[in-house]
Length: 195
Image 1 (cartoon, rainbow, N blue to C red):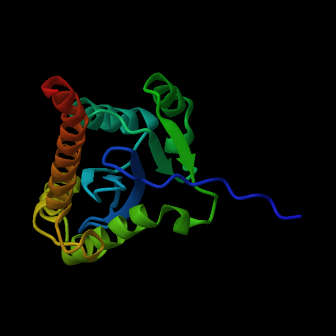
Image 2: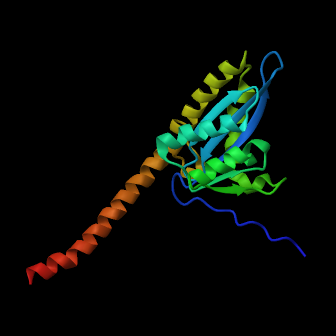
Image 3: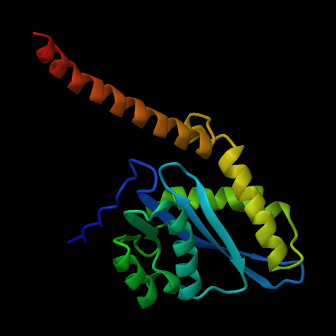
């Protein structure tokens, strides 16, 4: 009998599901670089890229806290089962901030398709194009690429808009929809007052 697959949530609005993962590279001297990427699955915004030689759960938590302070926390946080993501400190942080973990099955990167796509573009468009002298240089270049990705690079999956444009348009549509709903609700009341 096959084991049932976990239900994987799908994002239907900004800031509902973030995904985070690690990408690896080397600097010019051959020293390892470990890059933490965080993205919003609905808008495809790159929320953060942090670079170091290694990452502990405490450092991952601080990056999540920094992003959450700016935009609030997501309902779900998708990741693989890497030690930094399943550490007790991270699990406590998720509970404290009402975030549900959405762990993908081991060996199933397709369950994190949007995160894998983001990381692939990051590798192809940034990491493979650069030779970094050290991790600090890598972090500066990665941040420049993240800003380009969010604000200048159109995405076919977003109707050839940038993530920033897509988010702005979505928020405008939500405001217009809310305004139309209020008008529709107010009309019968106004008609009732006029009779």
